[in-house]
Amino acid sequence: MNLTMKKRIFICLLLLSSAIAVMHVRLAWLQLLDGVPKAASAHGRVTSEMAVRQRESRIELDSGRGRFVDAAGLPLTNEVVMTPVLFPVRSREESGQLLIQNKELQSLAQLLKTTPDHLQEIHSRLQHPVYWTEQTEAGVHIQDSPLHLSADQVTRIEGLKISWIKVLPLVQRYAYEPSGKQWLGFLAEQPELVEAANKKSADKGQKREEALSVTAKLGAAGLEKTFDRIIRGEGATGISYRMDAGHQPMSKDDLRIHTSGNPYYPLTVQTTIDLPLQNRIERLAAAKGVKEGAVVILDAVNGDIKAMVSLPFYNPNQVDPQNLAAWSNRAVKEAVPGSIFKTVTAAAALEAGITAPNEAFMCLGSYGKYGLSCWKKGGHGHITLAQAFAESCNTVFGQLGERLPPAMLQQTADALGLGRTIGWQAADFMNSGPLRQIDQEESGTVFGGEAHPEDGGVRAQTAIGQRSARMSPLQAANLVVTLLHGGAVQAPRLVSGIFYANGTEMIHFKPHKSPGQSGQISANTAAAITEWMRSVVTDGTGRRLSHSKWHLAGKSGTAQVTRNGRALNDQWFIGYGPYESPQYAAAVLVQSREPGSVHLATELFGEIMDELAEMKDQAGGQRGKSLS
Image (cartoon, rainbow, N blue to C red; front, side, top):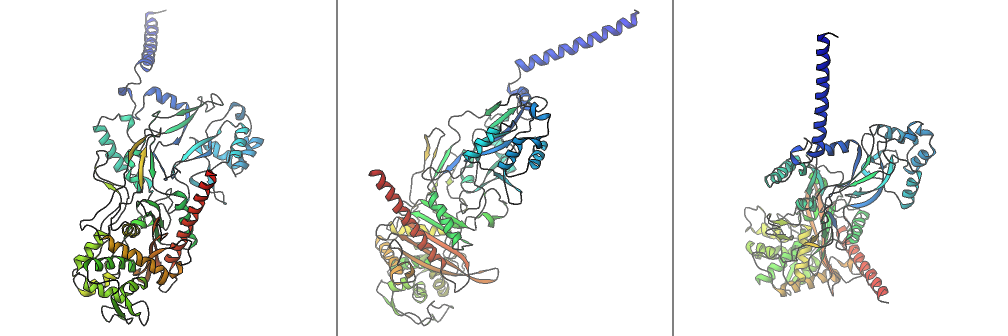
C-alpha cells in the first residue's frame, strides 16, 4: 500500500470520526439543553416537541376560550357534541386490502350518511385530522358544522374498531343555525388586533411561544368583543394519535390529550338571559312573519335583560364583519319611536305643570298646520289628556309639544333614560379602563341636529315621536321599568358575573341605576302614566290585548319612515305585565310594514306576554310538585 493510499484512508476515517462526534454532540444537546427558551424554533416550540409532533396526528377539540351561559347556567356557547374524527392513519391490517370491500367500512358509511367510495376517497387524501361535518340532502358538507352523534351511533361506530376514526367530544362554539342573539356576537380573524395584543404582551415579558397566532379569532362584536381580553383562555385542548414514519398507528388506542392544565380556566361568563324565553320569542317572531325589528324583555324588578331578539337573524358561524346590516343588533339601535314617545311628552307636560289629566281638548281630525293630523278621521271630539293618551291622539300631543319649551322635553327625556346610553357600565374594570357590557348601544336623540328646536312645528312633530326623535328598543323597554320604579332609571345588565373553571366567583356585576343629569321625574307623574298605560289596553288602541292571560298595560306606536324611497311604517308596542304585580317590561318593534297593515307589534306583544304567563304557571306547577 503506497503512501498516497494511506493518506486517503486516514482522511476518510478522520471525516467519519468527525461526523460521528458531531452526531453525538447533537444528540447530547437535544437531551440536555433543548427545552430552554433560547432553544425554541421559529415556530415557538423546542426541537424535541417538534420531533414528537411529527409523529402525532393532532386535532383541536376545545380552543380554551371562555364560555357564556344563561342565568340558570344553560350553555349559550361551547356545546359539547360527540362527533366522528377522521385521522390520516392506516393500520397494517388495513393497508393490504381494498377498504371498499370492508364490511365495517360499509357500515360506517351508512352511519355517516355517505357512500363507501366517498368515504374512502376522503380518507385517502387526508393530511391532517378532520371532524366529519353535517351534509345537505345533496351531499354537500356544511362547513364548521360537526355531525352530532346519538349515544347509539357512538356505540355502533366504536364497535366497528376502525383505527382511523374515533368518536370524540368536540366543543362547538355556536350552534350552526340562525338566531336573534346578536348581543352574543361572533369571532373573526383580526390580524391588526393580534399584532397589537402580542406587542403589549411582549412588553410585559410574555414568552414568545405564548403569543397569539396571526390567524387567531378574536371577539368582533357583542359579548365576545366586550369580554374578549379575559376569556381568551390559557391554551387549547387537543388530542393526538401517535404514528410511525409510515403514518401507521403505533397503538390502536394510543390517543393522547393535550391541555393547559390550569384549573382556573376557561372562565364562565354568566348572563342575565333566560335562554328558554329567548328561544320562544325567536320562534314567535319568526312564526308571525317579522322580517325586521327587535324584542326586548326586562325584569321589571331590577331591569335585567331576560331576552333580546334582533331580526333578521344571523349565523355567528358565517359572518362577514364588513356587512354590518347582516349582524347588527337592532335591539340597541335607535329608530323613529312614533307614538310611544308620547309617554315622554306626557311626563314632560305633567312635570312642567302646563296641563292636567282631566284637561279637555278638542280633536277634529286635522291639526290645521305643520302637516299634522290625527290618525282617526273626523277626530276624537272632546277628549281629556288621559283619554288622549289611551287613544294616542296626535292633535292633543301636538298642542302639548307647542306648549313645552324644548329644554323641558329634552330634560324629561334625559330623566327617563333617553338621549344617552343606559346599559350597565363601570368606570374601570380590572384596572384596564371603562367597561360597557352592551356592544353597539346607541343613545338616540330628541331633537337631533335640528337647527331650530324652538320652532312650533319642530316641537309639535317631535312631541308625537316624529321628526328627529330616536329611541332604541332597549331604551323603550327600560322606559317602562323606569316608570314602574317611580322615575328611577335602572341600568340594564346583560352579564351578572364571571366564574373560574372550579366554580368560584371571579367578579360580580352589581345592579346599579343610571341617573341622568336632569334628575328624575316625580313618583306621582310616573304613577299617573302607568295608570294611563292600563287604559290603553282597556279603552284605547291596545284593546285587542284585553283578553290576554294577564292584565296588561302599555302604549302602541306607529312611526312613519321612508326606506329606499318607499313610505313605510315602523310599529311599536311597549308595556308590562301583569298589571297588578309587574314582573316583566317589554318593547316590541316591527319595522318596514306597509301603511294600513295590521299592527303586528301589538299582536306579538300579547303573544309574548301569554308565553310569559304560561312559563310562570309551569314553573309554579313544578314547584308545587316538588313541595308535595
